[in-house]
Image 1 (cartoon, rainbow, N blue to C red):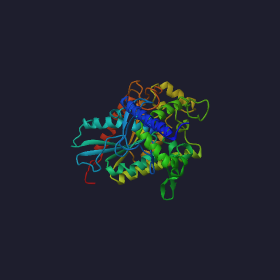
Image 2 (cartoon, helix red, strand yellow):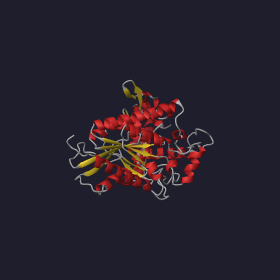
Image 3 (tube, rainbow, N blue to C red):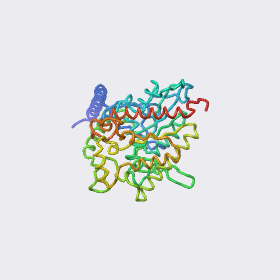
Image 4 (cartoon, rainbow, N blue to C red):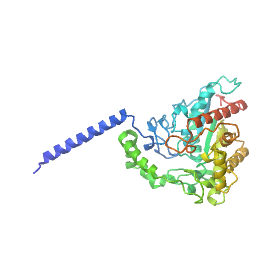
Length: 407
């Protein structure tokens, strides 16, 4: 018969062996460079829905590859002084995964390349004795409403001279209204007689409650600090990705771009889509007004879908024809109309990248692990976006009294 003392000794040895094995495993994975950004990037946030944890770094390797580091606020960026130096013209960028851009190294993101280009003198004839500083407040999965909340909560405090909202046509419209979206942690802005107000229903969802409870906070701590836990989640997500099928089609015989509802290309005919457009327009109007009230000049950067800007002209035409449309430009035209009504400067990337003679047939979308011509921008896509965005900033600084540190 085993004595109680022997049983305790065996349990103690097993515990020690397990702890040693885990420590060795953590050390080995650390030496091997194993980490997984998506394991912890979606930390719950009571205002924004979620925000990456501050001062963390991990690899993202599912689409492209990059070591992602967050600053003290949890955004993918370096730290910045809250007060703006006298000799600096600040640019805040807002948006989603096209701007957080965890698919490429941070030096290759469009906003970091834009900053470098501007500081090298990209603005011809620039006589302003100032440097340029770009601050990123974009997070993968953010909707225009979340970008507006990020402006109010964080970006505005840094007194930027320019605020650029990068708007991805592929999903920013559907993410503006709950009935077209499937994200339980997302805050929405809903219309009232007083204007748009934050709908905080997400804080009462089972998912948010689970993530912010004792067990949820313990799990978040574990995945932020344990490479073993990150490896387990990475393996789980890899299996899930293999099972992903294209988003449900509006009509079964239509071509489909992963994650994009084809109704985005059509004039809205349902209450949900009309509400999505109305909500989006109201958000853009509020961001424009609030930025200007703070002394910041807002701008809209329109990011097209892969189908809209694919270099294969015939392919674009066939895609539109299969949807029963003359072209895929309805959402761009409507966004331009909204911008005109609110005198909001626009960088129209779809038009720039499909204009005859403007660029080669090189694909700007598509990374290793993804479909060529679709998905997120590759290195060349970010470079082209940086060049276009730098031109936008040059036009703005030439027309406006930017950089006034006395405001």
